[in-house]
Each structure stands twice: as C-alpha cells, then as structure tokens.
Amino acid sequence: MDLKPLPPQRPKILPEVVRTPLGPNQSALAGSPPKELRALLVEDDPYDVELVILELERGGYLPITRWVQTAAELNAALTEERWDVIISDYSIPGFGGPEAFALVRKLNLDVPFIIVSGTIGEDTAVEAMRAGVHDFLLKGHLRRLVVAIERELRDADSRAERRRIEEQLLISDRMASVGILAAGVAHEINNPLSVVTGNLQILKQDCEALVGELLAPCRSADRADFIAATAASFRQAATDAEEGAERVRLITRDLRVFSHPDADRREAVDLHKVLESSLRMAHTELQLRAKVECRFGTVPQVDGNAARLGQVFLNLLVNAAQSIPEGRPEHNTITLTTRYEDGMVTIDITDTGAGIRPEVLPRIFDVFFTTKPVGVGTGLGLSICHRILTALGGRIEVKSRLGEGTTFRVALRRARTGATAEIPVQTESVPPEEGRATVLVIEDEPAIGRVLPRLLKPHLVTVVSRAREALARIAAGETYDTILCDLMMPEMNGMEFYDTLLRLHPAIAARVVFMSGGAFTPGATAFLERVPNERIDKPIDVPGLRRLVAASLRQSKS
Image (cartoon, rainbow, N blue to C red; front, side):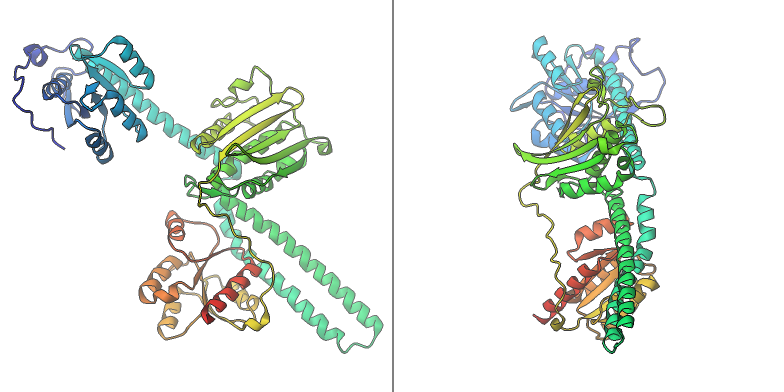
C-alpha cells in the first residue's frame, strides 16, 4: 500500500536532513544500490513521517512504507502484509506507542519495534524498553535510526534462526523418543495384522462349532474326553495368539499417537490414555529397573495435544527409569499420580532413583544441559518438555532429594467447556434376531477382503478392490446398509470415492465407514477432520466393527 498523500503543512524540510553526507556509522556506501526496507509507520504528523522516510533513504534504504494512525489501521496492516520494522510515535490522540506495541505482541509478531518521540522523558522511555520495545529515539536525533534498525534486524534474524533450530531440535527429540520410522512401521504391519487377528477370531468360532458337532453323536467317554481336551488346548492356543496380536495392535496405536503429523493441533485429550500409551512405549526401559504404580484419580480431559503430551511423558518416564540402576526392580518404584485441583489437572511422576544435586536443579530445563554420560543424554528432553507444556498453557515443576528420588509435576488446563469425552463402547454382542445387513467392502488388500466377509457373518458382504467398481455398483442400483472403505488406495482413494459419492448420492455417503492403517498424509488427516463419518483403525477391532454394522442396520430399518 502506498504512503498516504502528504498535506501541504509545515513544508519546510530541513536541508541538513536531506543533504548531510553519511557518517562513519551509517550503513550505505557511496554508489551502492539501496536496500529495500518494509517500514510500517505509526504516526499522526505527516511532516514527521516524511522526516523518517528521508532518514531511511539517507541511510541507504529504499523504504516501502505504510502510514497508519489508529488501532484498526495498524491491525489491518499487520495482518495483511509483512514488515521489516515498525516505527511508532509515542503519543497519538486516542492511540500511541504502548497501545501499538501491545497489539503487535497480541498478534505474536517478532518485528523490531522502535519508538520515535519528542514528548516524553527518560523514565517513560526506560519503562517502554522494559516492556519489550526494541529501541527509543528522540525526533530531534534521528541520526541513530538506521543504526538502530540494522541492529534490530540482525537480532530479529538471530531470533528467527534460533526458533528454527529449536523447532528442529524438537523434531529430533521427538523422533529419538519413538523412532523415525514409527508411522511407516505401524502402517506396514497393520494390514497383515488385521488378517491375523481376523483369522484368530474365525478359528475360535470354528473350534466351538466343531466341538459341538463332534460331541453331539459321541458315545465313547474316552473319545469325548480326548476331543474336549484337544478343543480346550486349541482354544487356549488361539486365545494366547489373540492376546499377543492385541499387544501388537496397542503398540501400533501408540506409535500413531506419537507420530501424528498434526502435532500442533489443540483438542480435548484423555490424559490417562496418553499416560498408558507412554508406559507401554517405555516398557523396555522400565521393566529392568522399577515397579510401576498408577494412582489415577478422576480427572477431566485436558486442553492439549496427544502427540506432544505423549512426548513429554515418555521423556519423563525414561528419565525416571535411567535414574535407577538396572537390576532389583522389586526394590524401586516409579509412581504416576493424577488429580484435579484448583482448576488444573496435575500428573506427578515420582521415582526412587538417585535424585538430583541441589546445585544442578536450577539448570535442568536449560537447552543442552545434561548430567548423563556422553551418548546417553542430549540435554534436549527436559527443555523441550518445558517448551511444550508452556505452549499448552501448562507448567512443569520438580522436587528432588539426593539419594531419595525425584518428582516431576506436570499441570495442565482442563479442556474448555463443551469438549466431549470418548464414549465407551458397549461390550454386549449383537442379537441374532436383528437381521442381516448388506455391506460393501472397498479394500485393495486381498487378504483383508477375504477375511472380512467371514468376520461379519451372517451379514451379506460384497467385496471390491477398486473404488470405481463400487461407484459403478451403486450407480446400477445396488443398495448397502454400510460401506467399509479403505482410506489409502491406488487409482481412486477413499477420499476421492467419498467426494464423488457425496456429489452423486449424498444420502448414501453418510453410510461410508473409513478403514485406515494409520500412515496419514496431511491431506488425509484434514479430510478425516472434515467429514462426520465413522472410522475404524487397523488392526480392526472385530467386536467394534460388528457393533457398528448392527447400528447401521438398525438405522436403515428406522
């Protein structure tokens, strides 16, 4: 936006301002091309605006300026354009430097802010600098303006570089916590794991049916005992295998939590679920060092981000474990305690480890500070925990006694009113008298396509491997109570299928349930947040899937 036209007031421009040669501290050299500078000017006097522009030109800059006089104009300028520096008068009728700086702070902008004024004293200037204003100049001494701008621009660049490095360190620490291949590993094992868990369910069902058929006509007691013992062994083996597969399923779910791509999103978080996931992830470190006790109170959901909080608690648990020597875990304890008090949810992680020396305690949240041996600690974990919790509006505190142990207390804000908790799913089975649903499965993994019809008996299941074929069947008049659609597929993926179906048959689109293995692209994550449809994670929770299909059938009949 161009500079506002200057009215013809106070036309006398001091010659020395325009023609004074550059001093030894000025930045521009004779003959060097001017440097572009985007300067936002907060000023009510056009003459003073012109003086500032002339001083910038004299200092070797090509100023691109916008002149504002009110809070509304300043807000518009800050939100519409990027600025290198803000130069503000201290006193403007109805507005001024302090108010302008407060607005810049409110918008969380790191732009050099320099006050130029001729009406205030030294005490006021000092107070403004303490509030965060970068520099303060008198209007009669603008020679220092360019020097001040260049210094503040260098400092701003340094701060931006430091933030970039800190962000990279945050990512590095996060990846060190769970492994950089977490999301890929989860995705790669979820499809075959769905086949394993599904077939184990079928084996158990078939075993029960076979035993029933064999025992009915059996007249030999020995034969009956043998068949019953064999069946019991078979059922036990299937149950053990199913439990092992369930443990893997929980691990992959935990990996998805820690590697979630949308890790800056704020939402209502079930704190106990995050703590349980962190405990499973830290199991290897914990099991050889200490017993774990969980004393979970009744707490509301917290305002936060599951991935970030998981990173915090994993760091704290690993630190607690590493403070205890390996061996004799029965003699050491790590205790997790949650409570709700004074409007905050608190989590205490207490260990019976070595404790922290008093002289070290004030420095433990400093970047790169560590007491661990070389190769064991980076000095990033606790500083990043502090940064994450501060950004979420929480805090972290520590108490320690040398030789007795340490307690880290994390305090988080309760989720704002209206945040909904996850609704527990009922565990009862679907009554057989409810009838049979028609289900369309769109899945490019052949093994999953084979197992789902057997899992969903007695419902009528049609399986296709391509989304376009599903659209053709629907266009031909085939109707389905539920459509189970894989999210990530070649040719046409689940998102494209849904958008096409929504355009052609909006009523049917509401029946789509998405299946996902967890390796989300940013586009897939945004899509799932946008649509209201149900989602089933792989490995598939079979009882949950059956309940969902039964609910769809009831809805179709109503």
